[in-house]
Length: 442
Image 1: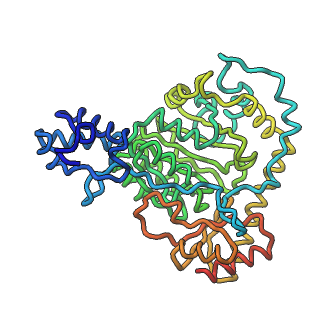
Image 2 (image 1 turned 180 degrees about the vertical axis):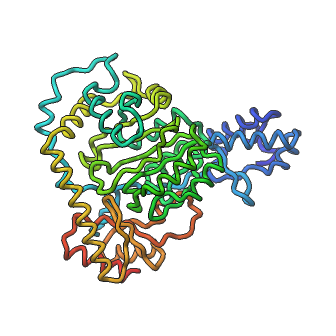
Image 3 (image 1 turned 135 degrees about the horizontal axis):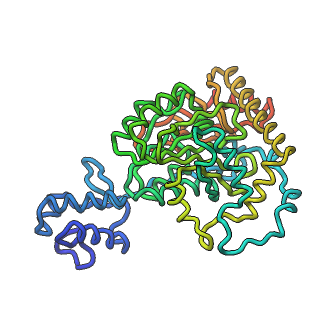
């Protein structure tokens, strides 16, 4: 892009706002493509006959709005979102898929009987966004694990946890804001950050949860939100310990207005205790519990407890007539989770996942692979070779697993030496065969 380029194909302007708008127009028209480099600040200032500080301010505006990113010695480039792997997807090439991360269909309750209980009550414009009966149940369900009075918290219903995360960000953040997120992290969360133009501050994990050093670094980098999984973290299976929760709460005590989002996706299935980072003095927070793991991924309902300010901002995104969650789905979810037989089946499902994952860890140990206990639908398996090469060799042997590289928040991170395996629906013989194949591939 040179000064002699035709009008409409070069950056113009004399103020930071004009220059920023010019770059955005060039991106919209396809003149500037993802990954393209912008002129160095000094060169742009000379080209436009402006002060260098004006060019710096223009690039800062573009970075804040998520249009460009500083690439160090490579200069400033148009944002090129790295593709995020899709959860639950693999090519159908005859290999056995043990990387999808899905619940066992045998444990998804049949809604036929419950459906008859929830129909026949039309919902019209102007009706409450949240079904009153579901709100009453959700208030008790969510407040039981929070240091908040049930009457003090607010309840919102969204179309799943990913919808809750997207709406929370849109309601309370601005593109370009820094968000602290677990690394490795949940694919949908990573995708939401990249598509929304937010900047990720990766926070490493250990066996007790987010590391204190990582959280401090993210907050020092200006994080305006923190997203974490209190138990059954995906993909690692790590659950926050009580001691780590106290340590992280102490750090967050100095940042009460940072939006703190807890995604307790495995709630009713988890075999671990719930330890929250939401302290009694934290001002901006949301606890999200979806029903997809125990009622099925197609049951797009998530319950969100939050403070009043967050609830009001979130509610603005869920006005009747625009994007409220179907009351049929809300009533159906309530009918299922309050049915004694369904709750017994959910309890059996949780025990099944825990037992089968323990059995697979035992099979891995027989083949020389040590996996610490964890929670969730999958196992985070350490491998001695780079994960991508291991997944390729396993596919040749007829198995599809997920490379740990797919769950990295930072695309520049070192190659992963982990694979995520979903083996809870395999019998003992198949689990042993898979463990042997992983050992051989690694």
